[in-house]
Image (cartoon, rainbow, N blue to C red; front, top):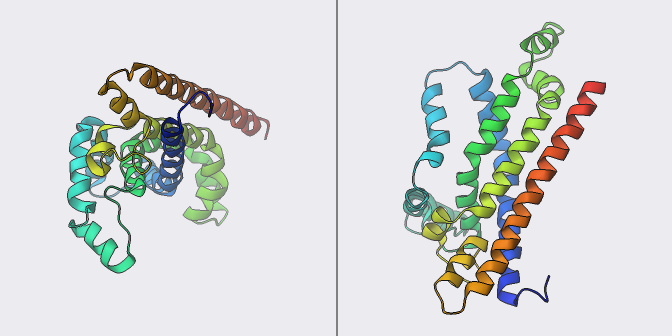
Length: 232
């Protein structure tokens, strides 16, 4: 692949994989917690939480990126706090691309995990509760194993969304080669320069291949885990 792609193109591919993987893993704990709250929780403001979680899906990605820039930019309330006390800079850094990708992929992860949790028979959880297990233990030993296929699907969906994220990322961290230029932004750059069609096509084929592989892996893992759960 390194011979087929130029060093700049290979850097964009590698950065996209790093950003998407990091965004997926960083989103997972929060995705599990929010999905469980939406599936099992009973509290005031549940509908508001649900709306906020899914807001990135219905808002233009550029709006999401602009809001991230306002809040997490160097002069934003959160960004300034992170910089002054921890030396962390998100805007115009690859870590900011991770944040933007995680925000855009988070609703897909939460939705997949939530549906999987809701499909778990509540009688099994209640039975574990009557044996003295607390909520956290019931979730770990009963709910989590049964909804594992949904968790895997949610992770892959988040990864795929992060790989294809463009609007929020380019608004928040710009399009800096070697630092924030992911596959979508690299493709966009090639479309804006003369004779860039070949490079854009190569990266497009790479993007399609990664997306297809991610979907196949998701289906395979979900079926494998599902069979193991059925046997047990």
